[in-house]
Length: 484
Length: 137
Image 1: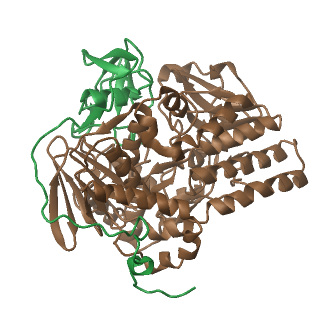
Image 2: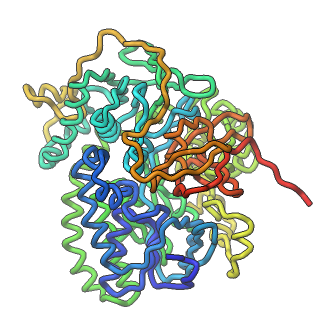
Image 3: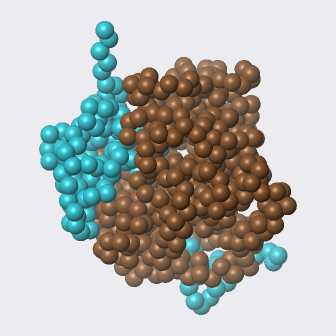
């Protein structure tokens, strides 16, 4: 629907993935006037991307994606039946602390006023600043999976996958199934599990299905004769105008593989651009090397009218996102006076039980696959800020010259000031400053994101009749780190 | 909890295969090196419902529902834009709207994220060069 026609509603849900769909569906059941804003054309999020179209086609792609993908259909169907107002292709460029949401749809900007907002903006692949990561041909393993899900497009057979965790193996297995003979899979974790992950094995054994899935991916890779390296480090993408060669270190040896596509993956992190620009408090997660919003058990943030559901809180996976969405919806219903605290708590019980069961494998995954590629901070000519092409050595130079605040560095060097607004470099810049100064990343802080956090044309902006205030500017002039 | 120390998971699960993530895979003896250059991306199947739009004046075939970025990648486009600082070529990196490397001009509007826009018949798409220009009146 055309979102500019709506001026207000009770609840806005941002994001059409499992958390957002579950939250909106339950909110509708509780008779809350709900609008869901989705950047995509159809519900499903990244995990169930294009699921309705994909499963109605009966083409080659759906079988490749497996039963996990198909399992999202019930959720999407229930959402379609719920009667929630669905706004597709809607980019959210502002969520103000008072619940006003700025949206662009088909080039038209509008403001939607609400009493509560649930951010279900999910996860993004952790940016992996290795030498050459800006070359055409280098993309995320998740990005390649997006191409497969939405369009049945696969990389060429001179593809190398590098990284850690389950996703690179899943993508590799899916590509093999699709008939793409991969060149190599570079696994950045050691062949041996770290002891801290082994402690979690008793829990893992209760998740037999998950283990079996992983095993089958590995078996397929081995059966196809794909070269697999463990404990890989120093991954570098080389080439003049596009990727030509992938070099890396394995078992102390320097190796290289000619390739046209390199798929990088070092885990996923919460997508915090909106929650940060809305002024929600965030904390630094040293184990996961990422910022994440501070939330309570309902997903409520430090901003009264804003809560967060799903992987945008912290990475717990697509299945866990559903109960997290429902918990946020119950809390919103309580805040909107639709249900009592008692009813909220009673209804929450089943969702909490499910959440507990679905997240049992998480401590194992977190410990077995900590961030690896990004663990050593970039050095020398490695580009940190993709947009403004700022290198690690230049950053270290300006830090030694006395620029010690991310926002100061942004203003004076343009690092983080390009179109991505620091999404790809913010965390790395903070970590580099922390390392140079011997401080913690929490002390150093992060860029202050400025609205609009998505491009809005001047024409669309001028056509907006309501005044727009930058929520970050409403704070009282404290240093940037306090505004996290 | 039993302290296991640096014991490989292989030993624990022996003789069956260990977890997916620790499984032993035979390392290849020799790396096969080939210099064959191929297209970066291909379609598994030709589109059932094809639509057409133009990129830099060239006709591009897309499947209904493709994002502009997906269609351009399948078409073999390796340069979506060049950077404002060094003029380096860029191609989509994240495909979900975060990296902004896929920015192109669509029907006269610059800085469109090609990975978020669904391809429509007759669209006029062009790559973006460097810092762009602005006419000051």
